[in-house]
Amino acid sequence: MRLRSVELVLPQAQAAAEFLQGTWGLIPAGTRGGTLFFRGTGSHPYILSLGEAAAPAVRAIEFSGTPDEVSALQLRAGASGAAVETFAGLDAPGGGAGFVVAGPEAQKYRFVAEAAPVAELPPERDRPLQITHAVLNSVDVAACERFVEAALGFRVSDRTRMMTFVRCNRKHHALAYAHSDVSSLNHIAFEMNDADGVMRGIGRMRDAGHDVVWGPGRHGPGNNVFAYFIAPFGGVIEYTAEVSEVPDDYRVGSPEDWKWPPGRIDQWGISTKDTARIPAAERVFRFG
Ligand SMILES: [Fe+2]
Image (tube, rainbow, N blue to C red; front, side, top):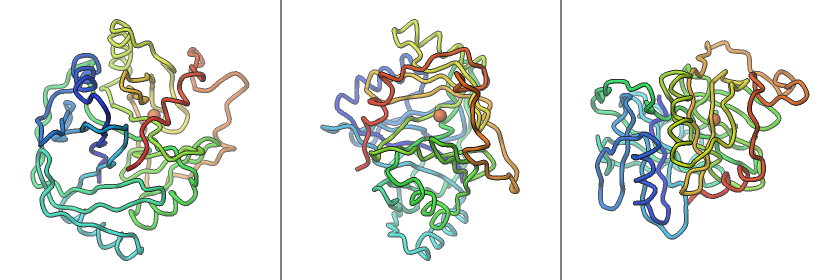
């Protein structure tokens, strides 16, 4: 199973689309009705979609897998007691059958059976390949953990004081749940080829007037290189690279395992974090 896409709705979707294409580096992947789809250079038909709405919201976090993987997961989710809603043909590039299941804080997780693999585009050193994780603010992280483990078969990789990281394949995390007083999208991470791609992305964003709000740095859990920005449409977006892969018997880390020395919030220790602006941006996109 692979994280594929995040479905967002927001006011002035066209302006957001222009930013995502012109500056962030996504590639248009078609439209369906009023919904705009974007892809990276990786093997997903799309990695983000935008629709028009009066208020910003996350409509779904989408995963894809083989038809067998998706039907097995549908059985598991149903058996766990979660409310499962099936669909026969998704109205999106590539189509596909699958199901949607709601999490404990109204998060929607969509699983789509991929009929045929999508060809990768030639890699470009400063363009995102795909989405590698989404972090969700949660009022009850433990409940979210229980849900993804029981209903979706995801596994916890690490817990820190701030959040719990969960995976759906060997990548250290596809989702993380951050302790919060709201249920919202904390950020979406777009994967670059390497750390050089992250740095080039920072430069391109800075040229366009969007300075990094945290980074560049290297995280503890996942060991990935990161740079965070506040998108002009309001949410937090990240360029990342080099996220670790973990074995089946990976020992689940605890907050005690992930303590930084005083003054440090990442491995490198060279960046500052804009703690005035970031928290508000992490609350812009609610679920619904
Ligand atoms: Fe991240």
